[in-house]
Length: 532
Image (cartoon, rainbow, N blue to C red):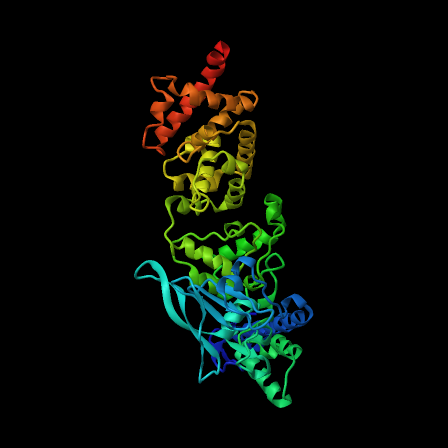
């Protein structure tokens, strides 16, 4: 249709007078509403249809509903009566460590214990707020002081109900659940099974029903919590759709999610590690691991991450950095991240380990190899101060990629993180087992495998295995080295002279030792052993 651009028409919806070309055409007739208003109406219609479909799906999909669930504390979180000397008020009362607070434990009844500087324990005396009637404690909260670039403690008031919910009750929506309903509206009752984290609208409806009927059951409370009409004003049903591996959900409008943010990338990777079939084919040891219910909601994870992450630092959410059989859990990983963020300054080896997150699981597994117990010379702190992890990384580099060895551990670990394969670490694990089983271990042998030279001798054994000889012959070579071979001169140097150099991690020194030992092995089997 040809338009007369001088002719205009008034839109019945917005009331604007516009040229005819601003109006659409239906069956050769010009519409009464402008294109802009027509498109806006269509979008609204589609949105309402999507909302209707979404609510229908929400009612049918049980996974989108909130269920009443409780947290089970790990044994190492629990403060037992035998240690604290404080009697419990019920058979099922248990005190669990609050990692965000200084030397504090809360019980599932809302009581709090603190450890004093002299090592003794005492119950913390709380006060009831005049405004909320809630039992409140004043505790030292672990916070980051940006001006001082360090972590410390700041006194903070916190309610008993908030502490109990944090440690014992699953809270699906930490962002919007700003209220707590106490059973029978008794704010003095802080027993964990009697507390419900709810939104303002849900709380008001629960209170209305309670006042109307004189009581409200747990079932009625959960029906209100899951009712669409009592959700937050900006809530949409698809917020709870399990769109990530059938488990994770973003908990907000997609337009509000920064998919390239550090927190979202970390959250998505965590979900994939625990639930992706593709990841499990490459890393089957994640198949039996789970993400805690609260962190399945990205909004909950983001709240925690934003509170603990320091810009510019590196955070690795690997379950094995906590303990062997762990799953991804909020309070436990908080302890780890504060460590990584220099609550207690990391040494060079610990800091370097944060740059090899892709193989953290493999490194932890190798650290449990018998080699480190039976053959590696170390002290009691080496298992926790990063020494084992650094030694393992050095072993992989020097055995598999010797040209990539650098004095700076961080550089080497970064390179491994991007270029190594799981097979490299599995091969090292097998290599250490073979070495340990084939060697007659003495105190002199253990002294060879110390922090300074251990990884060099492992790389030497790797080179030896390529000669096609029996593993036990390497053990005999080591004993010969200790008694006689250390004074054998090759290219004008003896092992005794090489081992004196203080620049123990210098690349030239390390390669010089490795070259000497491999040459000495060849000489041992071609000359010395023949003479013997």
